[in-house]
Image (cartoon, rainbow, N blue to C red; front, side, top):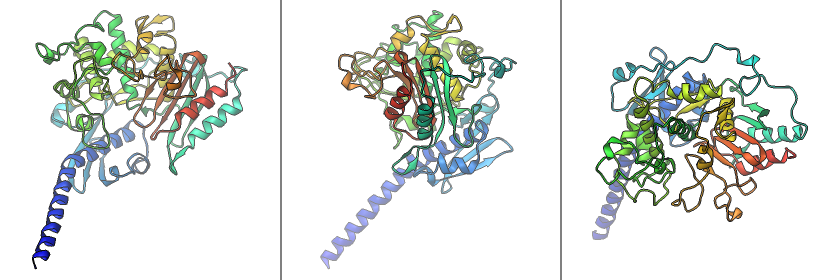
Length: 459
């Protein structure tokens, strides 16, 4: 009888602990699932004009995202997500602004915000030669093995991992400034804007560079974050933010509740949230990759430019300057562009951004970035022990004194690249005069892909 009571108590304890964990998981995970799903489905529908069933299968079909249920309301251009009826989260679409997940501020307040971005110039880009327009020459350089290059692109478009498709949506290859290969998946084409995820960080760094060139920001000065004045954070420099060495206690883990998922799906002012986090390390002493740092940077840009000019600043000062007219940056509920994650553009326009960096920040004769900006971008901080990160760009030469430690062993050490959550990439390889863009949902074998692209060019 006593043994039976012990067994029953043990079973009850296990059930109680299991129930407690279930409640804890649901409390933290359900809002993330419904928020992530509603935000990404909204952008896929209203920016990419994709079929809802395709998005649910390809983008949101894996567990735990598959637990979510989503309702599209065409009357107010919104998507609402929930998990078994709980944790409802709503995302709204605004023309010219994109999609914003409602957090902290009311829907009415968010809808009342004004974003007066400049329209694209009324020109027929199809009649203007690449890269200033979209007219692509019929011929390609004689040193390119076109058959081999096409085979490489075809393979990556259909690549699988662990038996599942990687869903590559688009590939663009630029050699010596010329577009030499391009292909898209069903439902996508050269006019489809695609989500850059963390490639957005590199865009935010470029905007910072524009302001540095204008003399409005100084890289080595303390970061102009009002809340940090007279605190232990006042020693954090702009360079610390660019190089991910702020020392802030931020965990970048998308597979559980962490600072990054809390920031992206629960916070209305992402930059302010991250700025409020405590220091874990002394500034400049430890590399810690953080989307929060990028959103602090985006908030600094907003405060530096001013409320009136901020909505149009990225377009006037950067994107339209490089003839990249498809770019759209989506804001958080507070109205600050989500500099870490939510940028949309065509594969060609992401390639134009790569060309800007390949050409040392100069476009059509105009120096848009400081002359030393690209060089500084490819120098890791002293705190970065693996030597793999610069100014919001990843670096292939982890240790230039030991080239065996390259990120991608079969790719030149001078490559630096923008990298997104789902394997999106803009790979800039100066020694090979290459810019390679791959857009998609899941990571491919990037080393193999780039090696074969390089192999198709007889330099």
